[in-house]
Image 1 (tube, rainbow, N blue to C red):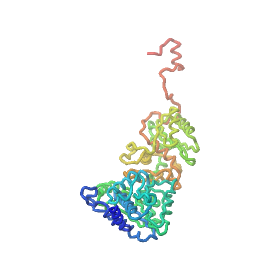
Image 2: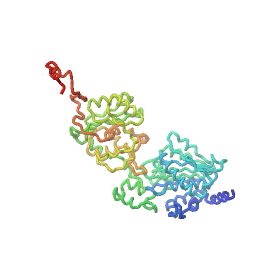
Image 3: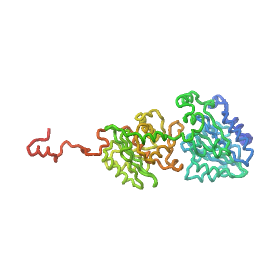
Image 4: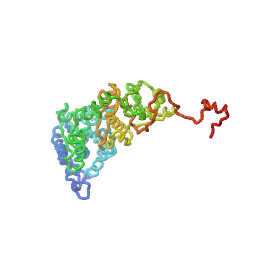
Amino acid sequence: MSGELELIQYLGKFTNDPLGFVKVVFPWEKPGTVLAQRKGPEPWQREVLESIGRRSLNPDAAIREATVSGNGVGKTALVCWLILWAITTFEDTRGVVTANTETQLKPNTWADLGKWYHLFIGKSLSKLTATAIFSNDDAHERTWRIDMVPWSENNVVAFQGLHNEGKRLIMIYDEASGIPDGIWEAGDGCMTDKSTQRIWCVFGNPNRPTGRFKECFPGGRLSHSWNSRCVDSRTISFTDKGEFNQWIKDYGEDSDFVRVRVRGVFPRAGSMQFIDSETVNEATQRDASVHLYEPLCIGVDVARFGDDASVIYFRKGRDGRSITPIKLRNTDTMTLAGKVSEVYAQYRADAVFVDGGGVGGGVVDRLRQLNVPCFDVQFGSKPNGTGYLTGDAGVQYANKRAEIWGAMREWLKGGTIPDDPELKAQLVNLEYGFNLKNEIQLEKKEDMKKRGLDSPDVADALALTFSLPVQRSEWAGHEGPHEDLIQHEYNPFSNESIWNENHGVSTQD
């Protein structure tokens, strides 16, 4: 017990010195440990820790620290150090840690916390679980803790209710650029307690050129409230400079890819637009040109909300204009499936691709009951490398939806679409970013709605026509008279069969 008391007293000396804390509580440069080759925090990490230490001496002012950076600079490590410092050096500290996605939070942020916790000399003073770290004193278990809380726009109360008057309160947003404004606004409300050490730290890559994270930095409307910094990945001792140099060679120093992933600089305003306006406008003005044998593909985007439309889109090779898309509102899945079946037979389509997520699964099932061969396309599934069809082979996509939009983007450079204001707006309004694997990830429909934009139903339907390669067909898209889809060797009602029977001629070999 005396040993634990001495440890508490020793660590208590660092209540307002997070940098000093980090220097002494981990086995830096100790042979046989994972830190044998590490001398301590990187310069930018030291800067953040020193800043918090200086400003923690004034409990009447909230501490707001914002860091934007390129890849692999040690953001998550710093998050872990701050958690351990905050809960160890101030009695009854309360806090919340969140990230842009639960996938980022659990296997990355919290998993790294486990690694640093086991290296920490004071780990006996607290307990670490899958969702929280808290005091080992049972009497303080509920009042002395920091919780991992995946954000939810339907549960902002979890953030609004965080107060700790007279004590220490810490909030940390990891990968903050993807956290919606509602959660940031809830965080604002947590910074209102008087005589409380309030610490709010946000970290992330500059994936989006707009949003609350961007506004924390110079030029943003909230920059006056935040102490901010930009960290270039090339300044970090343990990053692979050769890989960064290759990226610069491939993409260019001032490309958005290098700005976001290496330099830690926000992309140019509007530059995260996935498809540019010039490409779209040229596709509306170009003369439709298509080969007779090009396959006719149908894409079906199924509406999920009352104000959205279900869309049936037709594309034959480079012609996405000649057959007018069908837009249906307030249509149930059975009616939509019936309409798809009708146009499939009418135009003798070669392939039908349906967004099978959510209620779209019902459309897929009904079409198969109607003997319409269709493909169930899951937007969130893994891409399968169809980019070679349209010239974007080698581009890395996060999921199937991003891949088919990438194929559509390349196709638009030579394809034709109708001069439809709704379709044009949907094509150019979609934004994109990069995930942690440097894969292109498209903006979600829900996020577009938050920006006051319509769901890209028509554009998604066109993109669906690029889901898989389709074999060419002689009569694809032919609406006129044609032979039956199913041919029989013997037709008893044909003139030839009747003549043969009347004259005793066998029709069998």
